[in-house]
Image 1 (cartoon, one colour):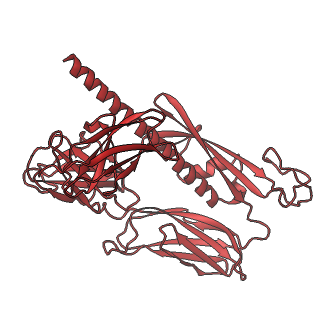
Image 2 (tube, rainbow, N blue to C red; image 1 turned 90 degrees about the horizontal axis):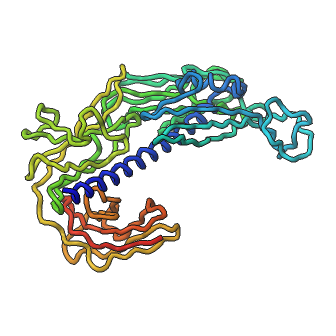
Length: 452
């Protein structure tokens, strides 16, 4: 019992460390994305609003947090924002004899003679948050060019700044007012839709056809940014303005694919993997055993990932392992994506079902020797040979053990090489298993020891 307890505590420590690392990485990724969002929204403001007195209030008015100190919540983490704005006098066109208000320090070294020292506004966002009892932080800095002097027509206003569309068929309409211009061009950040606005020379209308639902060409749900620029008769553009369009028109589609099968190497597990939804408003996923009747959505469905019914996997999660399957033979599972319906209610999407076949024989293990070398980046690279017989769908890599908790990664296909980019500065032992098309797993090849 003592030996078993020590082993269990070791596994729990590994799991706790892995979960803590994942949580910390997710929080930093969210902070990086938040910095980009703040910078993009800043560019949509009028240049004259980029001042220490106005910037925070203008961004908060667009739904980016509130209060003082300024805080924004993302994915369960509260980020504290400290904005900094200064006027940058670029020495490339000389500098002004008298420094502009709120000038950035230090001033560049250049000859004087610039009539307008307000060349750019340098905007910085210091983003901090708490993670595992420690304060983490990063800074996002951007330069916004002064639109006056030599540039094209200026967009003086537009409406609405943000709109939400829930109708199955609709058009996102945005009205712009500009200086006299020859044209106004807009593009949405879905990479597909752009056109010239109608109207002119000062009043313009953008009509973005978001197309009808369920026809295969509609613009999927999520938050989109529409960028517009006015052009003069010579084709010289003015500053760009950014409007936000939120589409929330249907529950999520079924995930594009679902595959999996029984893994009988150590026990009888069911491994499942799916392709992520393309909608931009997905909150997360849940995976269910479809019950004895094999029907998704019936009363006997059992949630297997995550185990707690009130929780869900993250929007980036694409795999699940049922460590205690209710049925050892052929059975059915389904995965469901969730988004936020109007009224802040979590809405389940269409299910993607999979009939998991009864477990077959284990595939042959990789052959030859497992070799670990050091890549140019200082990380371990593993190579091995294919099994002597049988097909391989992909390979799993285990680090410092061969239990479920020791899974470190997998190849994307039958490639026989893999690099551990998360090895850190410590040495490790590695094993490799072959996985067939039914997700059954071979005995491991290894170990091989890598020393940095």
